[in-house]
Length: 500
Image (tube, rainbow, N blue to C red):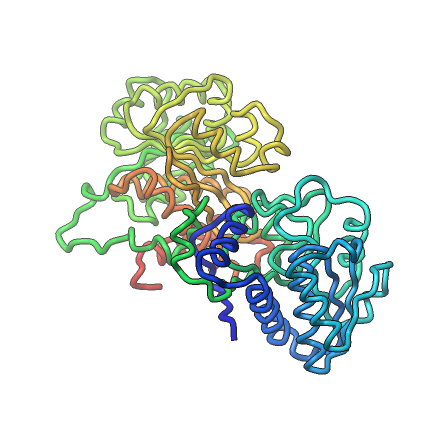
């Protein structure tokens, strides 16, 4: 048996790095490519029989590389268990070499031979095994590979992808023109960073990891490219509170925002800061909005602010400023942003604060910026599509441009600070694609900074906790219709790890 992990490893790698790990296992520890291929096929077959226990017929679609070799192993194992198996070869059979060729020969020795892929009727099988393309693919998928991928996607059958959905880029998580949309993916040896961000999460389906019993010493030879985080990984940053604590010890968050038509954003950020444990939360907003905000959540101290002197009086009592939720881009908004810059306090910047920043870029170390791809594009002078084409490159560019800590939000949010590894949050769900979710995250980050966490630690914890709160809230009634305010009870519960 090859252990399968649904709780994914925390070290992430590029496709090239995983191929190096594979080579280290062979060269330094004497594990042959054939053995690794047999283990990979065995692990995938275990997943197949567990998740589709009633399947009696499978189609295995193989490319010409080692990914196809894994597919031949699965086909042979299924054939030996008396399943009805069809094996289809995509690409010239003469191009199959090395360990993959040996796997074909073992398959043929068991009495089963591949046939050329020529638009077979895949809708008649129970499960399709996608073993067409691996991690080495670069450039847009075309010709017969594209045809095979589209045929698999149109079949209406469950699909198990081997190592990576064919056509998905291992480093960026971007479909290279087209990619297999899998029901599940079993990936091997090293967790590829692109599987956890951008389009990767959608194309992989359920993601499972198998290290193929590679010795741990192999991983010491190649440092990872990124790190996966989730709530369980970072919750130890929430230490228990001493009994003598009072509100002044827990920090004071100043939320700046709530321009005309946007009061709700500032309200959400303020409550999130309070729910995560900030001792005091003030809101600097339009004068006509202060009473409304205070009435809806009396624990928030709401101030109508127009002039710098009034703003600075608030800032002198604050620990951190969170600016952007409902800020707008009016003259009032620009004044508030200027006052915040001059306060000398650490800043958490979101929404229109980022849009205003993009008009006059600055760089500093004492802030956290939380752009979604559109805001990131405006700061970098790029289209959203360029940002999403390589999220890892985009966040590197952002940190180099603006300094501090940056969160590139989206499916598989990325966090980066200085020379630290990029962190990839594996939590969250599509229900969180709704108004106000970013405001809640801003409040959580600011609330943790107010309580004494350093900026990078506070941001990592906040992103993971925010994602977990969204996942827990979605379990109650589903993803569709999930509201930002639905997260508040979970934010409070997760802020107290003894409750989880």
